[in-house]
Image (cartoon, rainbow, N blue to C red; front, top):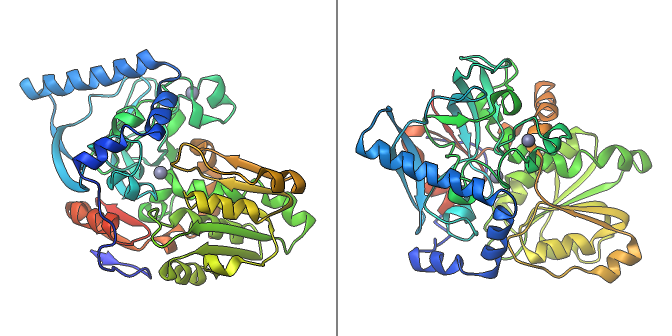
Length: 420
Ligand SMILES: [Zn+2]
Ligand SMILES: [Zn+2]
């Protein structure tokens, strides 16, 4: 196992919720809101999918017809272990089977594994990977066995109105919030920390990895690098035209012990710098994260140091906390924008009077990742973006239960797992 960079491996900092705490969390208002959103369209299709998956599992247990593989599962109490499961069934006409080569943690994986999100455990973990195509269905035209591809974490069909408009995160060809690595809550599509993964729409989803890009460097393009990109890239051209010295203020972590790891804020900072922003400030209460950001060329502040500073025309809240969003909104300048990745609370306070007076815009929601991947890969190919500089740990697949446990209970920013 190699430890790269910066954020040191420290004593374990987080305590996972056990069965009782996790089950109780499933009964909170935020869980019911999240569950309702997942079922608000195509509820029967989603249910059928879950029933089919359970039936298949039962049939394979009674009379196995397919080979077996290892998949990393996380259960209540943060228990991480390999499970011996059947390989996915052969792909349909539009599908493919891939073999992950480099899989990365998402900033949400820690809260997920600790039982602090609305997603029920146990589940097959992992939703960011670069993979090698193994087999493709008869209608697949753009990828072939042996190709290396980025696998977007969201499932999208490429053919519906939303997909054609580039809004692939809300594809209507599959039930809402369909994604890898979130178990039943994401629609039961499997996890990327596994020896194989099924892709239902290979032409629409898979993006070939350009020659010369290391899969380990690009593993997080599947989600968090694109997430960092979308908070800054759409806003920068107009902003920098108006004021080339405009400040980009990124709120990464507030409070004593932020539970989200900080890779997306670091990627957002890297992208802002790559696209010409001169003043990029990252705010985090963790000294190690601030040191990491400074090595990437970002200016940093502890949350308390923000007091009295002028507001910024573009603020990005990636803290996942009420306090972080409030901080970002109160520091958004007149006619400015606050871009927020989202928050795991049912509702939060918004400074509406201040925002009205300043004419500030808040955008909160999920990325349409598949659409963003080519632009992000182009930045990497050109040498303007180096996601590998955010990675803090690289470990082989055999050691992934230990490496990911260390990630979840410790303070790593980005752990990448490899299968040669
Ligand atoms: Zn994610
Ligand atoms: Zn679609």
